[in-house]
Length: 159
Length: 128
Image 1: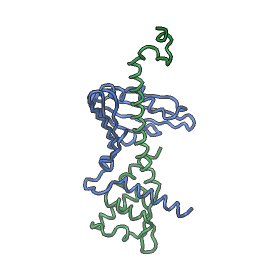
Image 2: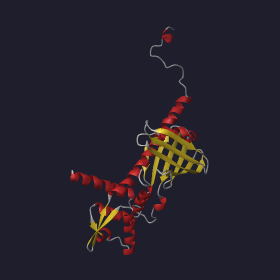
Image 3: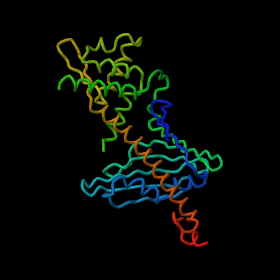
């Protein structure tokens, strides 16, 4: 099972335990074949590209095209920590339609091996630079959720 | 895909407790500037700065009615920020699934079936 927690307002954290040693999970995580499969969300999608240069300073890039809409979904980034089989840190950027890279966020993946089991803890800290230091109380996601509720209530009123 | 610069501004809009407070109040409906920004315990210039950021993000619009300034919430930019977060989370869920499936396949390949599958009625066994 996957556990999802929200440690703060601009990051997401996911966790899952696999029945495999840490080395195998680490290798699967960075395997281009796995990346291509992951990215091919729809069987009709074409041009699976997955390039991985697994070393500090090396880059990865995954791309897929929806032939129907002609839309490309490309993400990439740079590895800043490669510690097989315990930890992997890389930047995450969506490529925009003009080929420019969008806002850079950070993905940190911890592989906690215990014998034949490994727990993967993924933390995507997307918008750290935007986070206010004096921020207390509920996160912005809470606001957005409240806002969604407001929208659906309003929709219910008008219907 | 959403315009990233706009999306960034939507996140900026939501990244301060006072701005979130203003958005929450406006979620209930249109308000005057005074109603939407009162009681936060900060200076007027600070409030102006927060309102400016919210306006730049397109999260609110200001309707000037004589001397009264009214604020309205605009759903679209925040909607996109919410959708972005949800999509990104789903994307990671799918990666965790893909890794799981791949590892299972690897395991099966490493542990080839021990002999042919056992039949319910094994004639060789029965003839003994």
